[in-house]
Image (cartoon, rainbow, N blue to C red; front, side, top):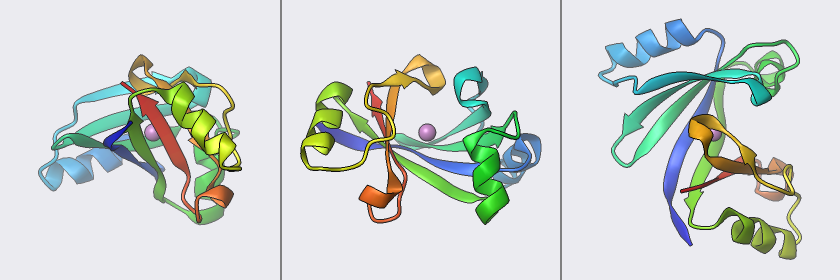
Length: 131
Ligand code: CO
């Protein structure tokens, strides 16, 4: 049911600067996309079967803007690719974990995603991604 690390999300202040840095390191930028619902612009950089997801806020009330204001740039979340996101959420809920999303929403790439609260996962914001 758990397949792989789908991506590691990194909060950045400026997407162009961040992608330039990663390109200089040898990464390729697969795509840049705006996810309006989450008020972010996202760049995906393939790393084998996983990716690095660079996230830039498009609004001051975006979760990414708040994260950077409080903690600076850095690793924001780890995304786990699962076969069935409803099942993964049920399992987490049954285990008594605190969910940010009781139901999946649409994230980058049009995929179903849902977040588990870092208070329940030893300080790491966990994202489930289906498919
Ligand atoms: Co993500």
